[in-house]
Image (cartoon, rainbow, N blue to C red):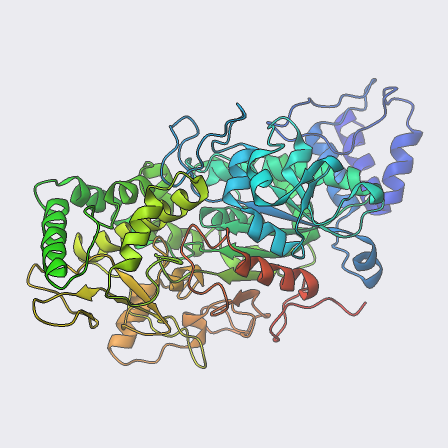
Length: 609
């Protein structure tokens, strides 16, 4: 018999015997090196090499991964496992600037410690997933801790979260605990968070490859610390949500600029078996209009003789009329077009992978939701969230006295980084929304409800202050434009109102964040609604956990998507939704009760046995 056949037969017998036989067989062999067999070989990019036992019976890293994956081939969510295994929440950020670029409006200012907080570092991930969100998710603790425990490693509130212990070469700094974990080292069964580092400026698949290597390292470090294998919850913002779908779909071949290796695909099999559920936040599941027209938006902003210049002239006229009414407005236009341009500054490999056409191809192909399944066929629950107001906490209430405009201008000049960055990023998103409506004359869609029942997609009304000499200022009506053909500035995003337009967070429409029309695309739904045709649930909310039919209407097992239409996070924008506590509190609710199996109720469920 040939040596390779002997190896195959031996592996087959090991697979059939199960996990204990794997351990016994490997330890009993006389051909292993003195150091023993490492069952967790590093993935490419994490360092280390391929283990080679002495003698003729050799296993590659891929074969070892096969053994390890088959040894825990089926997921275990039994009551016994649930009570003894901790949960690790892996936080995956979205698009970023290029790591080598100078910090921009949407980036943290460089710290005074001499350490880096550019994309791909601990400091950047701490800035991205801010203290209020992470703290609320972990129970609302006033302090967070790294894996190193208490004492000098204690994280005292938001200031230290962004400035202390952000050394990039210490993996322990990527973890956050709501209480000092040191006393429970080796027997930890609670919940912790881990910050994933990645370059968000590259192609979707390439970013997914980076994230996968980070997940492997973080999961292994946490398991060693806790003394047991954790359940995993994946939470991704924006492009990070598509990265989650990419990984949990485990695509074959070249997809979105990357090809998963056999070893990586085997690790994903194991990862899926340990995943309780996943969360996506402001993720363009059906693409983004911004990505579709980013070249046109850039051109409109760069046209100094046209659009941008006309907006400045209109603002100067507005200031003059307001002054006649006794209202002082700041000199600078309260819309940051340069920041809007910066928000779409990356290249085709990045923004092109967020376009409606590209994402639709993924949805109907390698990233079809049915592919997010464990080895026993159960589908991984996915909770979907999104914001609805590009202004976030700014310009949410209609005011005509100019006080909020003056306050906003003051915040843009603040010497306190958190205040300045929050205002500047909101200004950039409002600028982007303004250009979409007034520079390229598009909107965010006309789907106003996600189906039957209380599933509103239009809870925000865009408005602006109308000034006329001799008349009291008033807020504009939907669709109203002055003689300049441009809307006034700044745009107000009035809450719990409606303007017959799909809400958005400045980068992603709420319909896309919730996966409305996942397979058909939102335009097909709009066309049917315009013709007053019925849009069935399989088309409007495909793969929803309340539906047991596929997108073609055939009987199927229950879908796994939980579309979260409304909540305290409603009126956030694309960049503050993961910096504020509202969604962190919601994540805590999921961590406290949501299980690994989809059900018809409001939350996914745990198996009875």
